[in-house]
Image 1 (cartoon, rainbow, N blue to C red):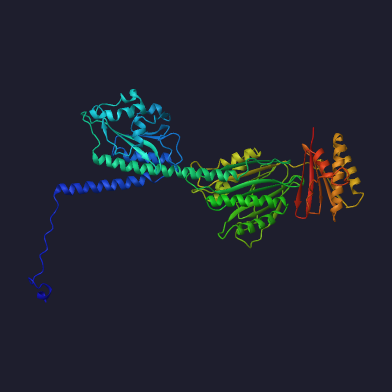
Image 2: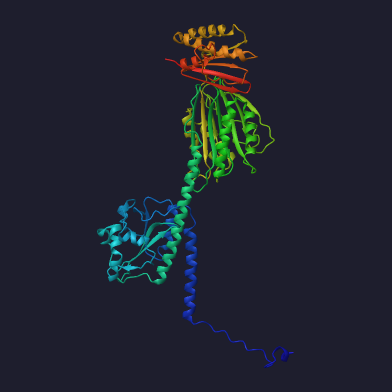
Length: 582
């Protein structure tokens, strides 16, 4: 068998004995392994953050004291759009100095860069950087650059034998900055120059840092675009209808979190009522912000139809299902406040409960039928009606206010209720301020939307309301009722114009109505008149000729009133006008 396996010798070949490497080779291998381990750990640390300052701070911490005794980082000013190559920088700003006072007096200041000077050449050059030791003939290669960057007096404070290494921070398309590494001479005055291994290590880490800075700038730009997009879809101010005072707050999430989908809104309704809405699209992305904008627009449209709160949520749920194949869930609470009846009607779609503050200071988390989030589909919503006497207030908010990484939702809700109970100020601005005081210090992982409403109501003596049968004599009766009410309120100077406009609107309503026509007068800082009928067709001003006998009613209203408009309701419409009171 052995002869068959080894026909030439009949014996297996000899295995050469393994030789141990010389001690100096083993030591070299150990140093290489340590160097590779250091580079791996340093690279991970440099790329561990998306924040610009944190990235540069990590760079300095991995360089000092392993590679250098100190590091000074400069970034171009202004920071460029990383999608394009802006060429030579206009200036450099000292952003971070680690282990050195070099340039500390000019921290934050921008040093102009000469396009043909040594600083620009060093940043734009593709040649490998060469370390320089002060006090040696090679100093001349770097001194012009340092004088342009720091000035001659600052350089005079550096001792002879100090080793310097200037490295550009290159992004994917442009040079973003410069890092200067410093090695001081030892106690005997001998220089400690950067050798080839040190230079190669520093170049590698500066390359990684340049790419990390580029990534941080790209992320910051995308975050700012997303944040601006979301804010552009939120109201910059809220209408302030009579009988209620409103305030709002919006706080974006921490810089490291993506943009959220929280929103708030206030929509005036006929009868001096107002709709209040706060919602939160689940998730954090540009898609969440876009869905938020669509739902907010849909809610405004539905509110204008004067639908009950549960019907508004039902149609929002349908709209969310039509937005695409993916499920876009959102929570929402919708409230309608009537300052004349001093009542609120609320409906909830899986949202955190609002806090109601009574006139005596008692607070309660409203126990509403929670419902399912918008977008689930096939779920009924319920409306709940509650008293809202003058002096009471309501706070709507998103879960980012009460739920954090360290605090569960139930604890945050009780903390908010208790906080508002100890507050003696029930103005909407103070409610928002007191609510935000429960936030723990530090960054927030979620955005926050607040909408506070203080209910003042409208006294019954400032309101007049009638139901009028659609008959030929009704316009005349409406004129008499309006005139009598204005004289009782001491507004005789508005009697003639108001009677004229009431007559025109009631005449139009009688012509199209099949049910009783409503006439309302409300006195606040303005006189508001509303005429309603069951015909949903909105009136439009028409161009009439000199001989036309009809079509001038709305022109008269537009000429006499300060403001006027028409709103389609679920079962008809309301045409209104307002006049300022002295």
